Image 1 (tube, rainbow, N blue to C red):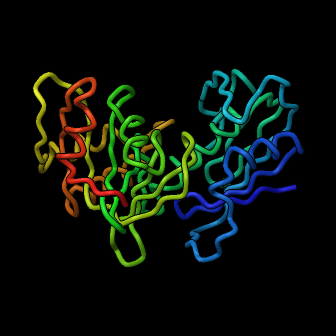
Image 2: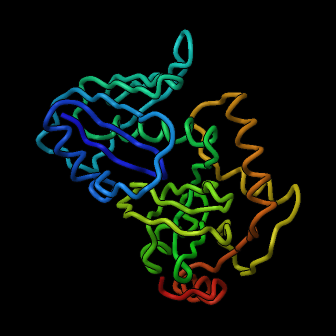
Length: 269
């Protein structure tokens, strides 16, 4: 059996044992491939998952996962909660003895982080929110910066990982991912805001090398690879050249959302 999905223009196929597929269907339901109008690029990414879900496992259970380079080739090895491997060039992952969806999640994240930079996309530690119809803003930030709060308050598409990708018309688009509790979201990306918390609230536009450094620190990398690093740097420079990158120091507590919405000029998308 197989579950087909589309995430940020990439086609995923999860194959495996029925309990895992049932949980995956629940977990990734908003990203099912039933919409043929969505663009798809390149070869599909295939993930085979074998195992028996624990009775206490839910579709959102996360077991600790460790990543390392394989002894040869382009393999990335998973260990910890389950054993698995992802072959970058083949776009194929396999996991065995899975007791929850954590290793499947891990393989999907690895795939997104290694495929997207070579196809014009960046996987960011960010929320994806709409500002007005057809327009989105990527809210980047470290854990605790306010991405989840902003995503919930502003009705965003996801609050952990989002994608900025060049469209066929050479415009920048913002896409959601399933992480966490993501829903399908796609819009023209008008700005990137890099969030932090401070007692001195301010928003300023970063420029030049400072903007490149600011955005680059939020690009997701699970492994270090010179080819990917070159592609990421080129894409980051292109994004900085195309749209504003905002350095947003936001207040703590209840003042956070009012400050952010005012600065964004936010309207419900």
